[in-house]
Image (tube, rainbow, N blue to C red; front, side):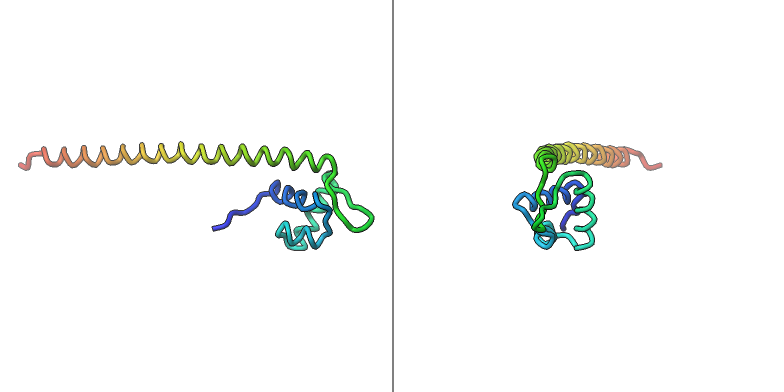
Length: 118
């Protein structure tokens, strides 16, 4: 099952494609976006000063765009590590919860066995 990209990941994907000078069509296909979404994101990142538009119909990242990509790469790396750590911690929690429920079942079974029938 695939996962959805968040807004920051889509922007990073667009900036990554533009790092080699790209036209709209190239960005659309390489960043895997519909034309409508591409136009919306391009307007946003143009307004934010992350890309610039060259005379010959090419988009290129600005210094701010390159800095965004660098910071996003670090963010993604840290996020992945934290997610993995959280999953490990959650697995331990699940094991502990199972241990408690098994103990309760075993305890109840033993109480029933020891209970004298009138």
